[in-house]
Amino acid sequence: MDRRQRKTREAIFKAFTELLSKKDFSKITVGEIIDGADIGRATFYAHFETKDFLLREFCNELFCHIFDTEKDDKNGHRHIFDCGGSESVFLHLLKHLQKNDNNILKLLSSQNNELFLKYFRKNLEELIESHTHLFENSNKTDIPASFRKNHIVSAFIETVRWWIENGMTESAEDINDWFFRII
Amino acid sequence: MDRRQRKTREAIFKAFTELLSKKDFSKITVGEIIDGADIGRATFYAHFETKDFLLREFCNELFCHIFDTEKDDKNGHRHIFDCGGSESVFLHLLKHLQKNDNNILKLLSSQNNELFLKYFRKNLEELIESHTHLFENSNKTDIPASFRKNHIVSAFIETVRWWIENGMTESAEDINDWFFRII
DNA sequence: CCGATAATGAACACGTTGTTCGTTAATATT
DNA sequence: AATATTAACGAACAACGTGTTCATTATCGG
Image (cartoon, rainbow over all chains, first blue to last red; front, side, top):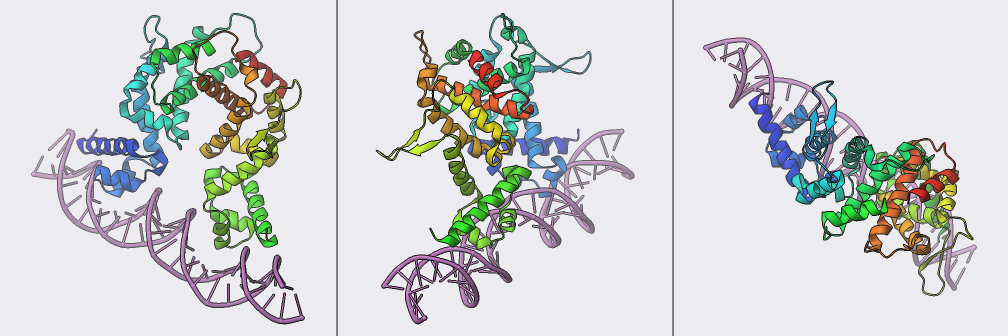
């Protein structure tokens, strides 16, 4: 990749991240991004079709980091790491969130972030699917699997939002504990 | 209220509802609303400060209808009816949703509807609070009440969205049953 | 060094928002 | 029925955001 392209791209991401710490995604304009990145308007559109595409790529990089995903060499599918031993994948996630890399907290708690939540949910669902053993139902049941999956993912996302909105005063361990006891 | 005002207001609501059946709230423009309502631009803004205010009032009327709320004569606070006997308030709600009054389904399942969901959640929380007995925890627990409430409300909302997005092929009774069994 | 490519910057058309104001019509009041 | 009040009209307007265009300049890789 051309050094100029890389520089521009990084400048855009940096400006975008800074703006995210100040305001909701929906309130951020392309004008502000190019001002922050100190690039021309046309340059921005040469890199990203729209603001939403910027968010999409931003999320991709973010989730790759948070979920510790790696390419599966075999078939090219993304493979989600087992987060190691007995620690809950959710606890692992909660601890990661606490670090607040890249203003992910802002993205999770802001008002107009449907897009971000959509991507977050998608990644969470993949994660869940690779850890189905955690949620196997011992007793026979007619509740559809997709219903259960939706329930778990939704509950987790909203639990996290509740945590953030209430100032994250509780420990990640408590949240994880409560979450599992309710589930 | 002046008859002219009432007429205009109703025309706006009608046009708004029709537009909601066709597209997401965020894609609807004031221009389209006034075209549909056949009123002047200034007239719209004389009635509603912004598009969001229109949604807010729309939701107010909608929830009053769905949740069967009534003014409490005593202190002016809104009082939520007990939906009668042993039937779950959730089942009552699910059945109501199935009727799809005022395109509420569209609002619940559309992409950019943070505002609507916020109002929906607010009303649901009030409903929950008036039915705490349904969710009393028999065993002593240190899980905060607001945590539990958030969990229940979130799970219900997302359950409904799952239901809608999957074509509402299941009966309201099944959904209600599954929801309670998981909870 | 040179051909390719990225960035520039200024302008542009377009759409949406929210406001203004003089005029017209409907309404409530007496 | 006359009058004062109030709402709607409608046309125009400024402000802002979006996404595109294009000729020019700077930087890159080979």
